[in-house]
Length: 190
Image (cartoon, one colour):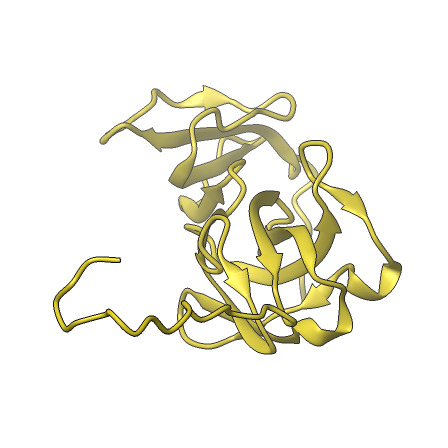
């Protein structure tokens, strides 16, 4: 048989947070509070009931991350001319993990480029390794010219970042050979 103490009920809850290698003083919990700096935070708390009984201390771990992923495009490099099938490669890092990486191919105007066609937007990259993301793309789908590769990524907390790289497509590039000259000799500068 269980008998309930008529004085039971929570009177006060106290908490403290580990900041900068030290605990804050115990604070009385009265309303929501904010963890102000990014990184790993430890929280301890306990309650005291109306009769003055103190419960054991509980703890939680929280990670604060308000920063978007860091994106470094490895292929193509700035103003590289691409031909045929290519693999776009990026290194994407974030302290709480990367959820997704998407590529878009756009016309070069404005900070993020201008959408050419929805078919070239939100092209989902695949994870090649821990921080490496890639997308195979056939450049013959587009006309020769200048383009912007727009890369955006989201971390596991929903922070989204982006970067762009200008490049060109040159599928029909024709190289013109120098004319043969009868007077050319090995080592002679023409």
